[in-house]
Length: 158
Image 1 (cartoon, one colour):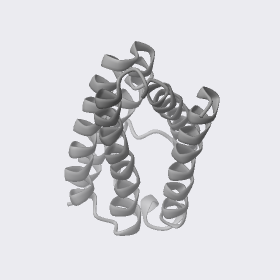
Image 2 (cartoon, helix red, strand yellow; image 1 turned 60 degrees about the horizontal axis):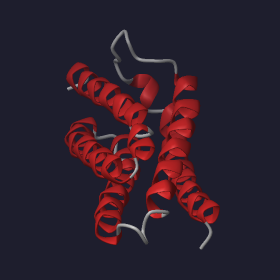
Image 3 (cartoon, rainbow, N blue to C red; image 1 turned 180 degrees about the horizontal axis):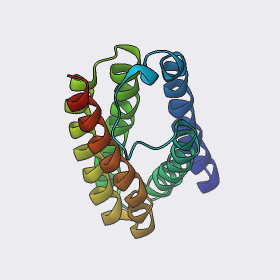
């Protein structure tokens, strides 16, 4: 498979996860979410979609870059991709837990696990392709912020 096709496949997959996560959140953004007490550092709602779109693009490119190293380092690529797939599933699960089930506490527990998987994916990607590892840094930073935001929302609304 050509290198660009691998990147396109992973990129499309990431964007689809983002799209379906957005579909899950759509109703709650206008109904449930506005009723929550939020911390002063809560960004305006319009910030989330472009930030997540950029992050999904970056993680998709990173994943494709790692997949392109499969022939050179199959064992490490398979290990890294296992973490990648798990963190992507946890990414989608957070939206369902927080916005569909309206459970900020369970979402907080989940996002901590999610953060750990992102961190491990970053470490594994960096071993295979330094640029792919670097592409995960903004994602890790944003989910760090999201974890603090989630914890604050839970605390303020318990």
